[in-house]
Length: 260
Image (tube, rainbow, N blue to C red; front, side, top):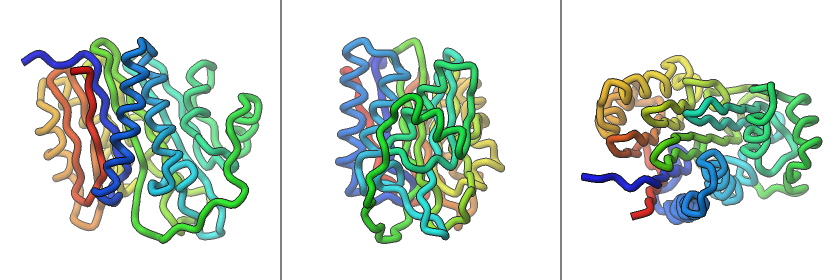
């Protein structure tokens, strides 16, 4: 079986309704269009995540849940198999934190948080957050994400509004390399779910190690889900030279698209 060189997967977060897969499908299609135009995988993943950030049904960007103090603080991260990496945490006041993370890939800095991330985003003229964000229903929904490949380079991207009602300043797995995401020469991984549990399991990097061992993404997915207890939500996207997989121990809207 010959795999399509251009492949992309997107998810709306562990806990997102399965019927919201129309939103993840639009995001995947948008990212694939960029890949088909010859855009870098980094840019294509960023584009797909931006679409998810603009869909208020998901807990990222304009759909981000509020913290215990009523603030909206977001985290985002992006990584490629060609050593590009950028991450931001507890960002306030911006519509698409994935763009801030991507912009960091072009600097000597890899991770900015709080005021430093805000000042950098202002310098890069990133789009501001809506002045009157809509109230959320409180429906459980975690990090959105994407993995993709152009047949040579792999990339992964994540964005989140964090856990609704969490303390101000709380940071989960998203901006931590090897926890929420990882990309290397053999594939890419993007996780979603209980941030503390994902971080403590070093989930993405351990999943990538299985990819390096030649394990198919479907088996990687099932193995990773078994690392978590029933009360810990976990979802995963995996793409490698052998194929792809996506799934969760909860409902999770996700989509796959390719050039074939």
